[in-house]
Length: 486
Image 1 (cartoon, one colour):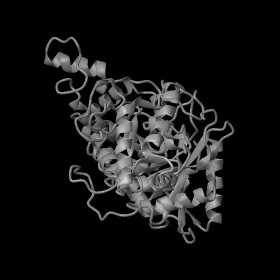
Image 2: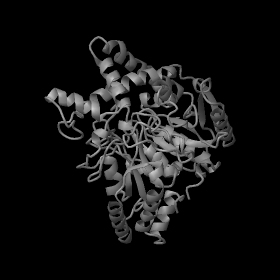
Image 3: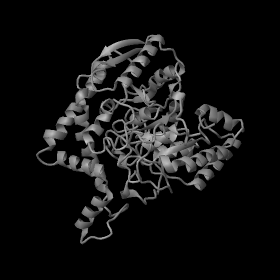
């Protein structure tokens, strides 16, 4: 059952061929055996997980089950969950026990009846593309344990890839769902900004952060998004829209679909193996009846510099709340209040978080706000306008997710700019607030997974999921699993 789809798991639970307790125990046993090496989970609590599974079994027995009731899930450790340690991958929150649930947790666990297996590892405060910045140590890629799983949702990606969980939650500020999905052979979706509530999701960059599902298939992502999405009056950025079924388009033919191929995504800078796999996927879409259209995103090359002004600026503001006064880490020795602030933040934050706070504080400071932050916001508008123009010519946009497959641990740790360029194809989607997803499309000559990215128009997640689903019905890349983990 560890490689079963969500529908298959739900059918087995409904037919009573297995219980949620048995299924949860199966995954807990795999976590106990494989997690010490992979480091995909920061926190597990088997007693709490099994108690939730027993509650789910009772709901199923009473005929009150939904499509996800009793199915285990890994929760990225950025979501507050009542009674669970919630660290955000940082020493600053190493011992923080959340007193409340994030809306995503409420919807998936309390309402849909899913069972949390634990809190998945992540780059500290979601700042990273390799899951090497976590205070709790790096996560290993199940496909090659010497390589990174991507970030910041690397623990979620590794957990699903290694079958430590059937599905997981992630968050995406500049590619943090899509890039690890690509590097671990998963399907991951970043919804339109505002579709999934950010309440209780520890903030990195508030105008960019968005939660989304990570799974093996588009069909599983659609089911998970059904439970995650929806208006939340606790989140001022949540969009009040009619609820929708994200599974409704699955299975529709692709005849007449126009796929845009941005010329800027198919130039230099992408590994040959990645480009060959993406091109093969494009050919498959032609066979499925889609029409290919060349489009242009002329300002996409500015997305990385604009992002690394806007995101650190928002991080500088958001992370000012971690001061050692009310909760979280506090320096053990200090002279006065100012000294406590300085020592707490110096000792509690890691190097990458400090780097981004310093950059963000600088670009917001007097004399530099207009030169950097304001200009970056203007570029952001140009990037969004490019997408609006492109979607007048096509229905979805296709390209690589990451310029390379998974790189070696430590390979880019000393060069932040090279690390930042790992997200060169994904960042523009966050700046524009669009939905984007990554899905498996092949392997390179070293046997490492390759992902392709699909980008949709605003609120077009259902069509995006169907475009991915159609490809997955015609291919088996997403069904392949790492060797040596049975």
